[in-house]
Amino acid sequence: MNDASFTRSQDRPALAMGRPHLGVRAVRKAYDRTVAVDAVSFELARGEFVTLLGDSGCGKTTLLRIVAGFARPDAGQVLRGGEDVTDMAPARRRVGFVFQSYALFPTKTVAQNIGFALTGPRAARNRRIEELARLVEIDPLLARYPHELSGGQQQRVALARALACDPEILLLDEPMSALDARIRVKLRTELRALVDRLGITTLYVTHDQEEALALSDRVAVMRRGRIEQIGSPADIYHRPATRFVAGFIGISNLIEGRAVAGGLKAEGVVWPMALPPRTPPGATLTALYRPEHIALAADGMGIAGIVESATFLGANVRLGIRLASGRLVIADRPSFEAGGLWPRGGAVVLRPDPSRAVIVADEPR
Image 1: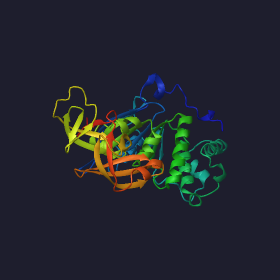
Image 2: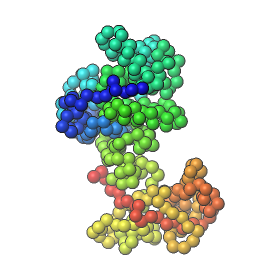
Image 3: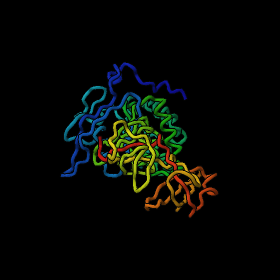
Image 4: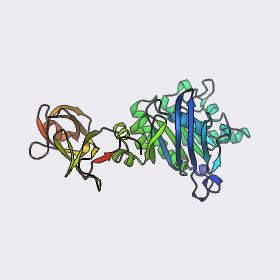
């Protein structure tokens, strides 16, 4: 399909002069004595895809609803292209919202759901509905009702409805949480491709870290109503700013020790790493070693341990290795080698990559 009809106008004030398309400034929201969002600030560039990632109760959905206008902040501002929309009604914000439950009308057809908020002549509305249905590949389903659709098809209907009024910003609240893993992987690829074609600024909420890393230009990790770190997926994974982010994203080996020549000394062994410049000897630090950055050998120099567990993950096998100190270290090795070389109960030597180790802070920066 030719997407020319969805090309976004370049002369809108929101897109002019390189200003942030969406801005959230010191937004706070409390319910009774519970602070749901605590002085959060961030910005999205035009066409950027940013994900709010965190556990249930961290404030991500409340923040999304504030951006949409469904909840009013106690303090702070929401800006669209520099315009303060904090007190603007949701219908005037030029924002499309996809709910976690999709919120489709059960007594309306797919076509009626998509065109619910459209106005104008019937012929123009019908053309828009058909156009959107083709875009999300549900055009054969326009006469069906929600209960006759799969979860993935319902999600596409909800997405088409959110796009019907040509929003400047698209907001999605865990739209794939009810889908099985195989469908989620397929739909997230399609969603990102669609967003890229439309060039639409997107703010996405999820608790699924794999989903966030796969979809996003940037990820904002939330904790207790605040953004702990915001950055590219690579930054979040490889250079976590805090101990919380390091432990929340992926599998982590977090080593607390004291700075010595060549690395960190912990529990009687030295973990090799390049210490930050001007680190004082004896300083207490916490270092992150990802499982894929720990090589193994049968003998020789390194950190001795015993293979305690092996979990087959397809391309890799995840090994649990118990050190003499009692610490359990996780190492990922290619599955074609792990079964024969590293049997359970076998002695191994860990060789962490010193260039990949990262110092993490215990408190947000």
